[in-house]
Length: 335
Image 1 (cartoon, one colour):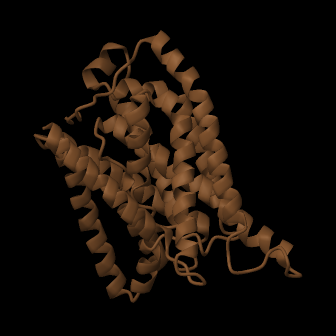
Image 2 (tube, rainbow, N blue to C red):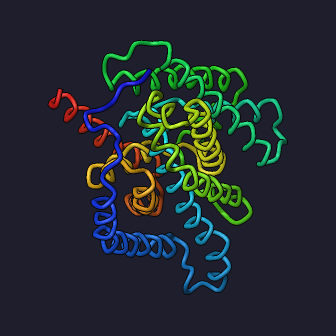
């Protein structure tokens, strides 16, 4: 059904894998310290003086802390979602924004906004998750029914599906005078994150726990349907589980933050280049670097034209585009 990139997933020797994990622990701790430094910088970056102003402590608790927590949860969610999708599709170019999953979440949000403008944030989140799941399963269904001659065909199919869904969203937005809402959503940003609004993101923690529990199943499923079936694994059921978890993470992030492109593409590929394809051992690295990437891009967006802010999605789009093109060029050179 799917093609494999030049560096297929595998099961490295257990001793070598254990040794590699031990060698990587100091570097993981160092990377974690660096990310903590970025998060501390995020807490104290902004135009409002949270240290000297009379109500600085209140503003710090209401805006800066929720924003930083949202950075952590959204970055981890999108990075891990990309890792799971790449494993299930055996393709390095797949993540929620290159499969149409994010666009489906946006369509779900727009639909509930138009049809039920007074709906609660939980209702919006439920519709966005449902739309994300439908879109992800449709992507897998299309992949099954076409002949893949290159690994590049997979993200192309996803981007085309996403473009169609995006066009439908734009038409509905124009027809219902909701174009501004769609524009705000596509410009994913943490500027509107504050206490009382970001709490649904905690659902992401449950998704991460579920992915850790099912990590070995995803790794086996990534070896292909035949291998998975031979070891007694229900391949379709694992794919559906992975799609469901990705849909939940993507839907929640879409409701609270908006569109965060390329996080799930950049981070898993950078980690895999250095550490191989074992999902379970790569998860801590993907989480740490996913949080670091989103935090760094958000800081850039907050200071580059201060006192105004550039949406983090724009910074991520620039970084992700460069990485995506670099991967395409390197893949073409390798044939």
